[in-house]
Length: 330
Ligand code: ADE
Ligand code: ZN
Image (cartoon, rainbow, N blue to C red; front, side, top):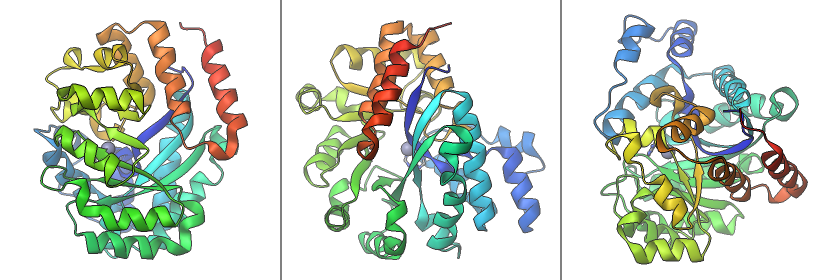
């Protein structure tokens, strides 16, 4: 669906399509343990978040040079633009690259080759959000923030991702405080597989402005009431939730109930190469399967711009919202 939208929950490493993975593997002399792209696609069968993360980290081995990161981002932006994305706030996982000997500079400069010209070439404005891996130590997160200091003019904020259960937000209090002092915006994954308490911790201890996923807030009515009252955006990822079995089927997704409750929901793609669809595909799927009305779809699109970190360009935000209001559904 080409309804104009902002994508607020997108891991750039999760946009690595099998074809590009094999191309980069060839270019860099990296051996992949899959015969071809079909064999790789057959591995895209997940039981939970961890089973996906295992493949996600394994395939990162093909990303080695600045040009690799530029090609990855360009491929994503081309697909996103074709599905109506006008603004993308893009996560990246520097620790997963630094651990392989690929430095922060290679990652950020490489992504920037594509992001820096994206508004001109794709019509998509972009921002970068650096995520910490929550299954790594708090000290490693602090080292990562220090490594990013030369590049902070290119990074709008920080996030928290990877294996959630057993790694509560409170573990990262110090690095979030340090990031806030540097003027960085703060988001965190919470309530994807972890309990509603992790959402509360992310708000109260990390000071996050948006919650990534936040799906499990629905188990705590008082928390839902708070999220509604405080207008905290949730970056939901419906196709991801199905593939990682956070919900049984898309028809069981609580998105309609969440909208009815007054939550500020947005629809995003998370790791589109792995989960069967980009931002527009997620909109198509919830329209088709959950029967969302045009008004609800428009609300989701408007919310995405409202929840975006476009404070430096309010004119663009207003223009995008006006485009949503004028959009004619096919
Ligand atoms: N890293 C990439 N995708 C993720 C997800 N859905 N949850 C947590 N960490 C991730
Ligand atoms: Zn995610």
